[in-house]
Image 1 (cartoon, rainbow, N blue to C red):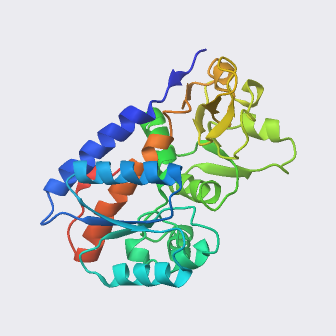
Image 2: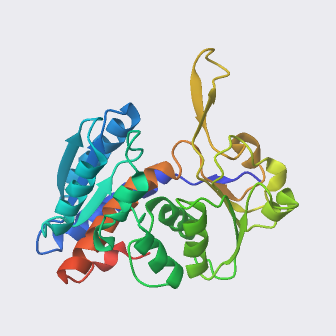
Length: 295
């Protein structure tokens, strides 16, 4: 068996089109505020992509660029100001923040109704309790890709390899919402290979390059690789290449479907962020959410 490739780029492109159409159905355009502190090159590229896609979808993008020596208090005060601004529907603070700024304190200040990244304690609590709210973008993207590939996920055994608060734990809860039987596995799980091999849906989010071997994959399983790791390039000495947490070249011969790295889960994160911004705007302003964004 050779796995079908789950193309996150195409899915994300289609989701952005749905967001764009949803925006045209609203009384006015939602606004997303992005806060960037410092000059981290990767963060600058990521923020530029967010701004570009936000505007392409017909929404307003508000950029707040602060120097690296900005105090924690000033960042917190900016977030509070954005909370109080009724024209701002979503707030995103680009991580990582420079040394000296407590990320947890800054994120905690974001109002849950504007937490389009789904990172606040309140958002995590709403997810855990099964209450409506804004869900974390990357785990939501994982569920969307799995549902698109498999259809109804009820009764499927989903193994989430990784227990981070950013991906692992919320992914487990989101798949539980889809009526999956969920197992959270990690580095100290006994018989880890066997646990992974029991999965109908395997989510690899452990942050270790090529950790998941083909022998860990159940024949016909759906494999969602969240990992993004840089390793030395074999073909270009002195250069690096991106790989996931899964040994893609071998696992694709066993799995039924699998996401590549890059081009799998990654593109879904921004697309889900844009979706969250529309959902946040509708919830805050009392608008009916366009059904085109349902999944």
